[in-house]
Image 1: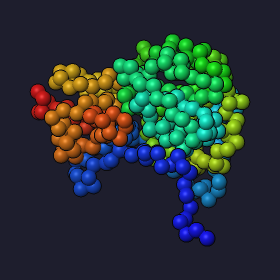
Image 2: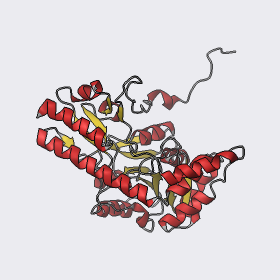
Image 3: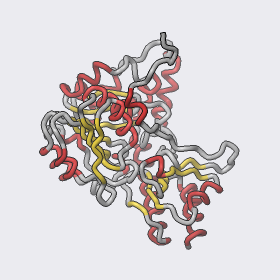
Image 4: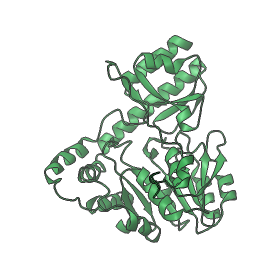
Length: 355
């Protein structure tokens, strides 16, 4: 009898773990966490009230997913059978890869990829086909050109870690070009933060490709990252296998209640978007003025090239930002947009160093 213990699947050895953004030091009185692209303006008040009201019922399994699926469907103008829910959009990504990938199949991703796309694809045993970004943006034409039958093609729009967005016409061209049995997963976690003149959702493109799945999350603009709720939208026949294999009650009762209510909290969404766009513009303007190389962003963060120790200077002032080495972009740091006061501190430090 062997005493070596259980052995993980072979592909696990090649998977680098996802490293979450670190918070400031616990003893830092002015700590600011700008490392995880969270909503610094707090959770939806309607969502929190609904979660509190749901607390007395947590001895029961939650409605699975019942009301939330109905609310999401109505919000986007689709049928409930076109919605699948998950513990954050990351679970939707893992479900897609577990259902539609296996050893011998391929996953086409941008390079650098979103970390969860990479991990979920590798865990499935699929081969990752990395297509380098052009001007920090998905090269959708090249991704379409390499696509083979049965591939999963992952597009993050806006992209993480670069913050760039693809043009709707380019996405439509990809959907019209790739084999019909491909799954095209469009991750729209940061959709609400995009400028009005470029914001277009792939949800309106479901008629173009049978394998299109659009993932969304309640973690960003709705401010519910700690509760873990997300969803996917697609054709019923494409989502049915995901719904069949997801864990029962995979979205907990508090998350279901909070997410259902947060969908109606337009005031919170509009305030969060407006303040985030304002902070993003201020940071970009400072980078331009101070000669700091950066990537123009449509998300709630800006990728800034390392130079003369500015990330360390922020850290000494209790401001945590995300090292690019963890995200596939060594030599850069990703700065999440914080409150106006937090952005004042970031910009003041940059001006002290480079002004």
